[in-house]
Length: 385
Image 1 (cartoon, rainbow, N blue to C red):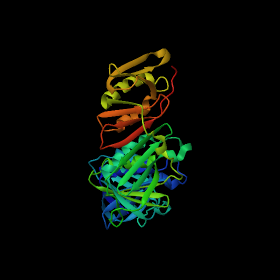
Image 2: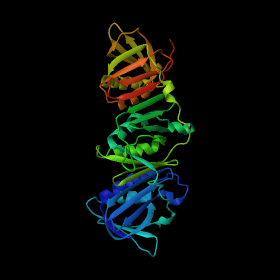
Image 3: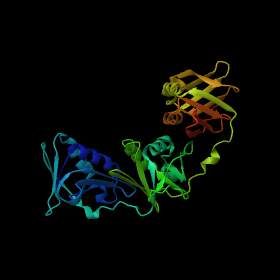
Image 4: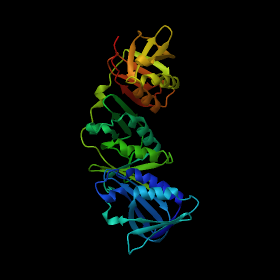
């Protein structure tokens, strides 16, 4: 195996795929990245795979001899990142031993490799059911829901995002038991693997948030007008776009029926400016963070103001008021400030509507934009009178 490639491109590829390398590998080869050089295509592909999440990317290279090897992800990445970006990298693997020679103008390094035969294959499912989704639409889905998923592995099904593709509608939901984010996208076109419009089957999967965060990071670099291919079969999903592949297992179990959590009607409703709301909350959160992140909202119908306050017991307190539109009886309600900020920052509308019934029942935040079908539900925090 012998090739020459760009230091900049190789370094970027290593940083990308290393996010799928196991931090505590069950087998030594899982701590490595797989390098596959193909002289016919002039492509060098790199793969990281921890048996749950897999990432593969490729770059152009001048390949004299094809081959495949694995190298320690951390060591390989650190060496390449330290090389000058104005000098190409030469990689040579002698068939007589397991040493790989890396050369640039900075010098020459020897790294011990492991056989590519020991590296597990990515679970490609191209022959299974598939569809294509617009990159920009899917990126917005992830941005609007991922933050609300749970980090508690004991609630495994809640550590992912539930995706439901139904004809021309995509519904995505994530919850950690305290909050719920739901985004509906209509008038989309999903194509199956024969480029025929999806018209009958409902596809529902729950995918791990860790995998989707890597996909979100990748989608943010893609042309928003392009499509990403989505393959799924027997507990495995593969996303393919341009020169990158992301594979992930699905989460087992039935996702909660979150629709029943959302009240049908509300007694109270107020409209407020999203950016002003975020700014005030971020300042008040300095105190809220000192004591369970609790912030209180108090309405003033007469003055058309919402007062946001936090009390850090012996440390101090703070309050701010922002303009609102409110026509109902005055009420006080409290929330976890972090939850509110997470939801507000995921929205794109300038005006936000807060709807609720009582200080102890679910409240929802929705954008004041008929073109955005997004609901963010949060459970209030009970406070003493």
